[in-house]
Image (cartoon, rainbow over all chains, first blue to last red; front, side):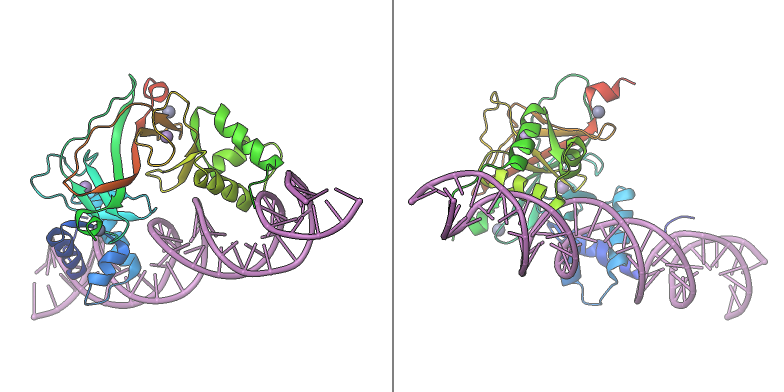
Length: 127
Length: 127
DNA sequence: ATACTTAATGCAACCAAGTTGCATTTACGG
DNA sequence: CCGTAAATGCAACTTGGTTGCATTAAGTAT
Ligand SMILES: [Mn+2]
Ligand SMILES: [Mn+2]
Ligand SMILES: [Zn+2]
Ligand SMILES: [Zn+2]
């Protein structure tokens, strides 16, 4: 009944944690040397999210990105309240640590945050 | 060459502006009495966004929602910086006026904001 | 080491949301 | 009232992700 530790899983886990950016399914496939099945990758990622090991971001390009926050990050992986930035030039999505301030009408209960700004990242905006 | 004012367009425009919530394609179809073609609806909505008449939100359910901000809203429809809330119970997406505070590393240029929180709205959380 | 149980994988089929091509309709300026 | 081209409708396509099911292989018990 408990989770099992498989080769594919650790590969993807390593990928995610040594990557500072959030990765999409494609992004992961691209970085993979040993080819893994599409579905397997999706299932592994979903499991990571389910287990609170990583978090999922729905970007404004409509795709899912997955990230493991650095330990500096104050938020847990559920309802993580920080910001994300997607560079439309280099197509990288990154977690931006720090608080986001807003106010909501009374009575609203927030379960999940999906905050994503897009534009040009530092590197790309200077060229 | 300029835009033409058609029946279908005005219907959808009216729908959007008398609706306080943001509407998805489905949401619109549901509210429509005279049936319109799927594609036509999408094209009309895309035109609205293109013309800065409405704005598009990519929600955390992966779907597109469209809204016309009330005139109180400080933002224009391009790069509108306000917050959105999606209630997972009643499935409504609403624009939440007000500023969102955050800080980004130096050199980042923001073109577009897609900020969406989800959970239970006021109505739904009290039952 | 061996056998057993069931989680994880791979492949095919499926699904949902949105877009594209193209022939037809229709708004609107002349 | 005509002519031009914007807007529509229908079919086909695309992209991103999920589901069903048989097969493989972790982890545990023997
Ligand atoms: Mn993040
Ligand atoms: Mn809005
Ligand atoms: Zn960049
Ligand atoms: Zn609600």
